[in-house]
Length: 229
Image (cartoon, rainbow, N blue to C red):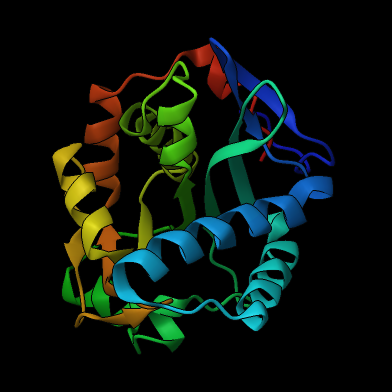
């Protein structure tokens, strides 16, 4: 990975048949936010009768823009350059407060102390969304599970780039189980509550568990070097 400013335009990382993985640039952040909101609206309305609010979309757009310099955004696109899957890793700074803190009332510092963790940097993982219906209907080169694995390899690779990094997140019940099926053992650190209409856990993932999983899910060195952070 190269230490420099995040890209203004999308940066191609790798092509998988008819779809490609990009580091999303600043000029496409609104599209990124809108895709995630669309996917959340579809899944959570169907499962939990959550009615999407346009104010939530504007909040997501605002957050993505404000956090751009401290984040890495990934997105899969098809041959028409339409987004199919996304994920985002954001470094915690004094100016950024995450939902796990202000909505779940979790003190990350207390968790670190309680678990006796050595932590140098804290990263938030979010904006995970995959259009599984399009992947199935168009018979594309990756399944939803394969796409998720690639997105996680790249985003967790960013988080583990510096030693002793801690991942924090808000994980709905289904994603928590899918991560476990993939071998990622996130630790629940608070009570279940509704978030964007979905039952959600506050979770952490230690650097030790991240590095162990990444060792078992190898990322080509040349792919790593293309990512701008």
